Image 1: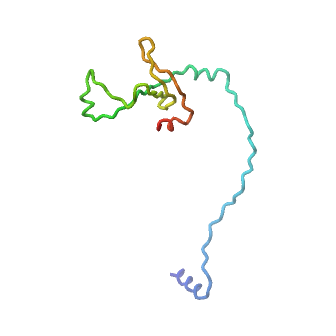
Image 2: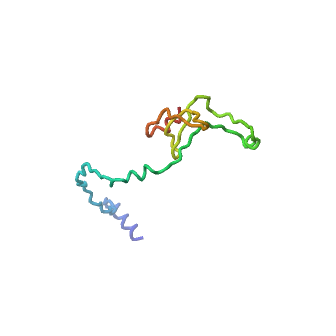
Length: 130
């Protein structure tokens, strides 16, 4: 109650009540040295570890959407019509990332792919839209 009376007295006398301001922290520009270009040479043989690593490459021939009912009706001899035409390129994926386009070929008694185009790095999402 005393605070309210003091505030009223200040208002009547024309004095303004001031609220204490929090202290402002000191701010200064950072003076950093230029690091320049630095080269870190990997010990010889480090890249060899990666060169001998195997990774699965996936070939996507096409896709189809089906109702579960249709899927359950499939059996031996069923044919799925994919969204690609004969002769269209197929997509190659490395760890889920599309990296190339290829054509199906027959190698002896096996199916293979002949790579036609390696996609530029960072362009796999853009290429998927075409």
